[in-house]
Image 1: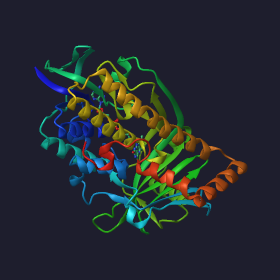
Image 2 (image 1 turned 135 degrees about the vertical axis):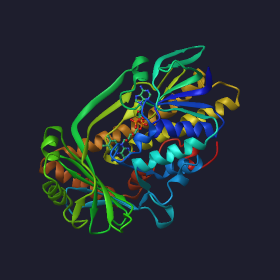
Image 3 (image 1 turned 135 degrees about the horizontal axis):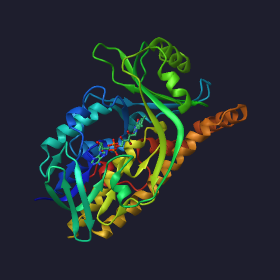
Image 4 (image 1 turned 30 degrees about the vertical axis):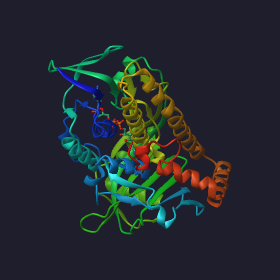
Length: 406
Ligand SMILES: Cc1cc2nc3c(=O)[nH]c(=O)nc-3n(C[C@H](O)[C@H](O)[C@H](O)COP(=O)(O)OP(=O)(O)OC[C@H]3O[C@@H](n4cnc5c(N)ncnc54)[C@H](O)[C@@H]3O)c2cc1C
């Protein structure tokens, strides 16, 4: 029988990060995931790229993941928000000595780095690929039986299985959810003009169109990740367009700002929805990442919200265990629930509001948006608040996100 303090179901971008963060603080952890890790880093498994905000980046540095990512990311120097191709734009640009707002990484690179780190951290046991056949939780502890017949015991179970979390459903946790009736089409492109480390968020009534800077290719080509949102009903036709026609459509929406473009990856698509679990804890259970909440990728905050869960849960458990409590203690879980629920709700609500505000068609709505963009551009404090949000620095910040040790 294997025993660990914490058993994590789900070794994705958030679950594996939590496993590493806890093990780095001498909390023994087991991570279980049905997918073979070598498959998740294969080209074509996940063609997305993620913006890791500057605060979670400090955590990745603190837990030893960042050293596997050196030179592989692209700093986001500024974010330009515009309503269609109108000249009225909002530019979020930090002071030169404040550093980048975040870093863009291909998800594949993040997975490589997490797996490479996880292999070297004492106290972290990986069961990947492996599937849990039975999971029991009660006041006495957590027991997980793998399909292989092996039994694992722990004090706390963490659900990190993403949007469809079976652990969340088994705990009968209510989830508020709605679909945006939108599909995000993802691809990587090369372009003739450099991106200047700018992330572009261009809002069209049909959905936002984002260009996120990637590092130049080995041949010196300039690259960006394209996240192009369209109505679900239009997606099959758009995705079915021949490559040249698709490129031409994309170029039209970019107004030539990056010059000529060419697709360099297959096109993939994801249906978009919002979901928010009514609570993120239960008896000896905590939820993290997409198992707890999912938002529109418009602001690139999805994985960052998960990283904020990781930092808060790690701090709560490390401090609690120093006081002699066990990780599954109800008081510790209550603290985690209090800490995270307000923050995730605020980010989710503002992202949802933004999506709706920019989705309203017609001239009147466009005028209001332009006035709003112009006003925010001129107002220092409000802009500062948006930038703090982009950096992942709002709310009561866990120590790991400040680059401090717990
Ligand atoms: C189109 C799109 C673009 C996005 N862009 C961004 C972005 O730019 N920036 C950003 O921050 N976020 C972005 N996101 C969101 C981000 O991808 C997610 O928030 C993030 O992947 C969540 O990580 P996770 O580990 O919680 O879940 P997942 O990545 O879904 O991982 C879940 C893991 O659990 C495993 N699993 C599933 N079932 C079980 C089970 N029964 N038992 C055990 N394990 C199981 C899976 O194999 C997987 O490894 C985007 C999302 C979409 C859809």
